Image 1 (cartoon, rainbow, N blue to C red):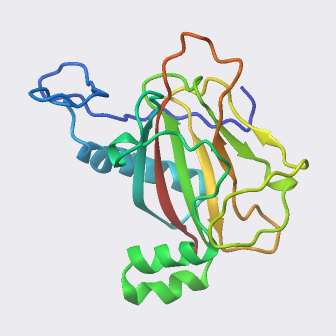
Image 2: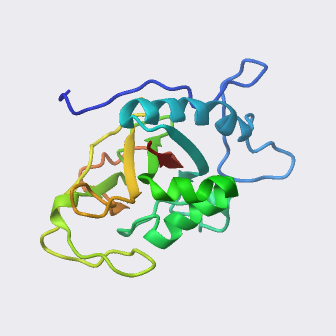
Length: 223
């Protein structure tokens, strides 16, 4: 393990009250509970641990989660709702500068917005696998040193031969990736954003289970 690797052991799902192993059924069948845990557990338990983690890594003064997404790859099922989110198979960035500022205005108290926008802030996505290593359709990130111009309101990424993509093979649920989706510092002294994508890895074992992951997006403010 290199000195630049950060590993944390966090509790993702709280176990059911009766002590049985948590489960989630992909198929929603009448008469059967789809899960024996409540998604409120994510906000109640995973959010606070994630806030503490991001503060420790970044030194930020305030970290505010504003949404999360659970993705479960199932090639036999179309993405039809928030409950059936699939990995995103194309390079993209979650926020543009305009939508990042809109997030501050939408999620923070109105009297605080002007002051918060006057200082450095970021949007960071904490991404990690659920339950198993992410061998199937892992997440690749574009090296910020290899892209330049950025325009447009919706950031889909066009191909360029200079782009360098990196990923961690078999990232485990005890590991994570912090994806910078926006940084208000835009003088090229730091990465302003990180294009990322799920992709089909040809080295994935044939018997690897389909990828499951969770991502939580945070507003990150500095003094």
